[in-house]
Length: 512
Image (cartoon, rainbow, N blue to C red; front, side, top):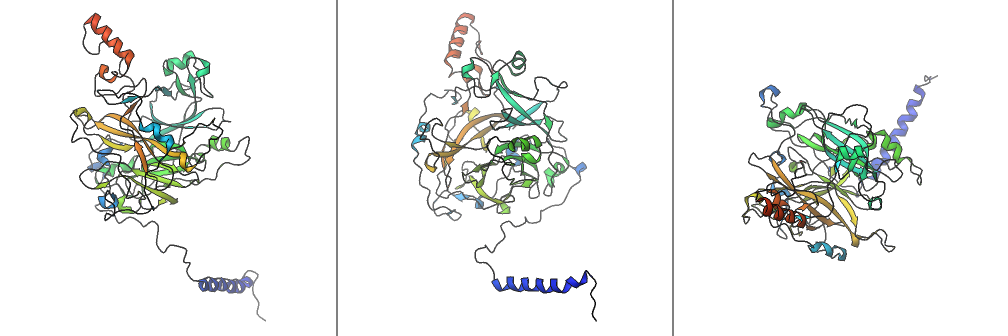
């Protein structure tokens, strides 16, 4: 008699069952609906060899001039200006201009630009942000900078969530998070929803215009370390600098609170990674799970853990990647906007974006080859030296804007009345090649494929109480009638020289 021990008696049936499954799958053949290629190939072996940290001259971190440390991909990976060029991208069927009547107001300039600085001044003012709460548990001596903000749901006790960098001695990166509110000055009827009157202490900390203030002490935001697999040569000492920098927080098209950070990369020296903020900050998970109208745990997480975003093909990557922005269709599909620059000495230009496929992988560049450029290099014809030498880069998150008023009963979102917009910067260096000033411009592009750029503001934008560096005080305020009157009056009565008693400099430099 053949005897099988209790666990072995199942071995023969299991083997037969597995063989049947394998034979069945083989009989089906290969699926013709799946692409026979790998979406993301590993990068080629890095050239060079590792160098001891002690043998490398220290350089500041992060790079003081990001333009120098960012090497654009070869022009073969961009698209040509000429239709049907060698490297043209014909992903989309057409690239006809989109006629959106609601955008016509943007094609006109209602005010004159400043005759010296060329900027347009908007009526809104710049207000301060502080991470020091009204009742701090201890004296706060840290310096915070580069805040990034998202609004919180209407049922939240506070209005905003703020993530900020903390100034360190350069040996590590540190970031903090807090919930915050805005206080207002002036008449109560002019306050926006959720804003409260500023207290005397608010005005002491924020200044006479009020602003945004953390509701409680900011806490450290810890992100797992990432591997530095491609830091060689001048970047070798970045391997041992812990922490992330330049975070950006935003809501995805599916309602996820996401954070994109710059830190060590598997494919470059520094790359960009994404993670759902709920994985790092549990109060946010509790908040989204407490909706008074939808009983759920909140949107599913597309990025529950830190996930690196990539470029495709690998040869288009740079040693230091930064300033990417994401935009989302109403269907929830995600796209990465990598670059935006003007043509230089070749026919190639640098607007590149791709669709996210999942797990950080992307398509190749989807920019339409028939799209006309909105940026051009004016240095050749510019006579003012202060306006020469600027470089373009992306600056803020994108927003999807529906071009009708919410109170309008017939206001319905559609492809015809929806666009994306974001702020881009033109950065000018000083004689040390360090950032002198950033000029703010708006970019608007279509919300439907092929996502063509509809326009970029011709003039740099300033807020009502903001100034710019590179010109005298009276020049930067030349477009303000009240300041002009002050200047004339002071010159008449005091016969003084610049600045004639006019408005002073304020909020004229922001590093990003």
